[in-house]
Length: 233
Length: 99
Image (spheres, rainbow over the protein chains, first blue to last red):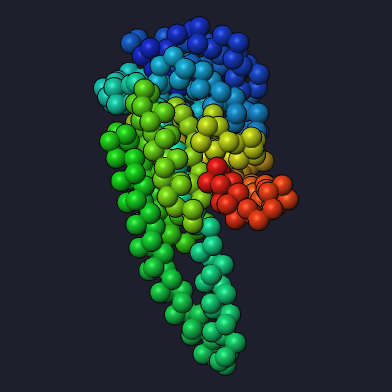
């Protein structure tokens, strides 16, 4: 028999999942693993399809857990036999306890930063430059713009991340930040925030957004701590 | 799950993409136990495709929202101009601050 696993915790209660359906419409139950417990669904040997419904169901169960206490969410698609899950919990006991202590009383908030018109500006500038020269020179100018643009984009992404970090200083107990200077979403940040300070965090982000109308600031949360609970990966 | 207070986000598509971004790429993993595949394509590859596609969708959805806001602001300022002749700039500025 195989279980679909949503999350682990040391304060999970069966009542948290009442009325919440899991992947494939399956009921959710708690499986005791010593000091820990796991929210699971019995899925038999069938694999779980990657559908919008199932992706949302995975998060829905984790969100239900988060309403009571902060769990350690599993990645979507995790299935394991009960004995394998018990073995995982036992062999990672110390690391899991540490991870739970790290996220206790906290939630994950997400921020994505996008520039509004960066690409369009560079494109227009390039076309006007290329129009005045031959094809060979235009090729070299294009390469030059790519090199200079790449360096400038990297510096700009770092500056944006620093600006964001400063903006949420004192509220983000931990941060997980990824830069993608050459992509549309330049900075992806996850912040671990105390539950009682979420409103304050939101106010801070509203201030940041108002200060930089040249950026798109996409905020989301509260999430279970997907970005802060990884153990033994 | 999406932050309504911050984003005023009625957009289900964007909300789904944010969920995807979280549940596919992060979380606890039991070694060797993520076995999902669709038509022989590993979930990781599927996830990458979804995430790559999501950037364009996020941009498109946000762009559309901005255009709606601009349109709304335009309507507000035109109404202000029609109702209070000669006071267009003041009203337009106030509408802008309100957003």
